[in-house]
Structures are given as structure tokens and as C-alpha cells.
Image 1: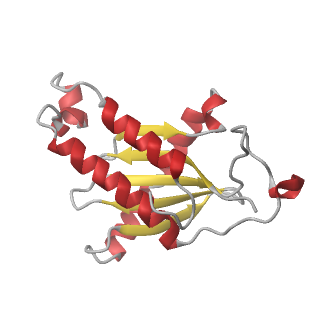
Image 2 (image 1 turned 135 degrees about the vertical axis):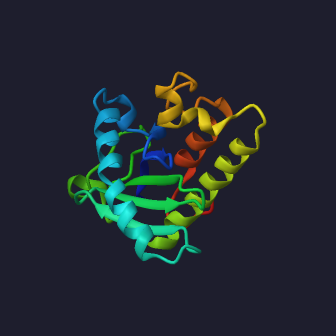
Length: 180
């Protein structure tokens, strides 16, 4: 059985600015993958807007935003402060060597991904983000587009090594149905 895996995790600020994008094998070895996933995450922002208007504001899980193709799907979660988490799931998964395998080319049957399967990863991401915000040395306003253009910000991306390590851990250990 082929288990889906996380291909990309994106943290998007309330001003639709990318705060962090993490890629996972086999996409880490592809030089153009970062740009391709940046485009996918950017394209999902309109769907985030439409879903967040239609949903009850208590429920932060926006479910599957879109199926990109038979392999990739984008799932969304929005915090109460407007920060968005996007997880791109690779339905084909990855082999033990870090490469991917097509279910058609001998990968076997696939496990389907449901709404409940991704929720644990989103909760873990939200916990990591809350810990980042609790850090007295982290100033989230430095990452807004207005602060950057005014010369008062450090740039768009989150640079906290602890946060980046935790996002990587979440992406590496996630499996459908397992808690993260």
C-alpha cells in the first residue's frame, strides 16, 4: 500500500505574503520545485478567501482547497488572526529512498486522504506557530509587506530555526490517520 506524504507546507501571512515554505522529498532535489510550489500556494489564496467567507469562523479547517492533478492536492487551515497554513499532499507518497513511486508503475494501491487525516498536521503547525508568537524576540509585524517596504522589516520569511525545524518534523512524520 502506498501512503500519501506531505510534499510542501506553506505558512502565509494575513496580507497574503509567504512567511515560510518547506519542501519535502522527493521535491527537495528539484531546483524548480520551490518556484512551482510557490505558484501553487499563491493560486490557492483565492480559494482560501472564498472558503473562509463561506465557513463558520469557529471552524478553522477549510478542508481540501483543490486537487491540482491526480497526484497533488492542497489543503487549508486559517487561524483566528488570518494567518493561513497550506499543506500540499502527494497521493503517490515516497519510497524508502526518498523518491516517489507511481501507483501505476508498481507502487500498489493508494490510501485515500480524508479531512480528518490532515487535521492533526494542521493542529501541530498551529501549536508551532503559537510557540513562535510567544517568543519575546519574534516580532510578527516585521514580516508584513508594509514594514518591509518601509525599511522596518527583516523580510518576508520566518527565520526562527526552532520553528523551521518543527515544520520539517511535522512534514517528515505525517501519515494519514496518525497524530503528529
